[in-house]
Amino acid sequence: MRRLVVAGLVTSQKGHGGGFALARPAKDIPFIEILHAVNFLDDTDSCVFGWEQCRSDRPCPLHSSWTELKEAFVGWATQKTLADVEQVGGLPAEFLLGGSTVD
Image: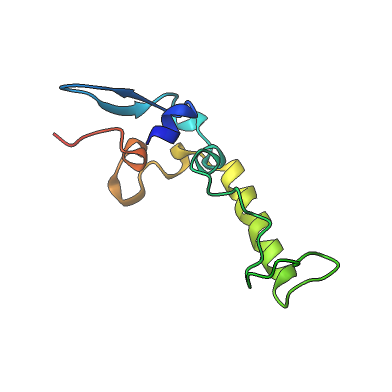
């Protein structure tokens, strides 16, 4: 959660009645920002087979498919926001980031 606070995606309040809340409306928080905040996309150039020298001029057997999948995922994460999945499982978007409690 600290990484999300540092990234400006959530706010935190210490003490009794404290917790976390979205820093911006869910419609203004694309998944790509969340993924970057938690370092999920830091190693997008890694090889699915773990090869050190997997690249276009020396590809592994899955290089083109893996590249296509990564690009599609990054495209989805760039376009979709928390509001786009707000009612997944009947929970508001705030629950995806731990920013609300059930009464």
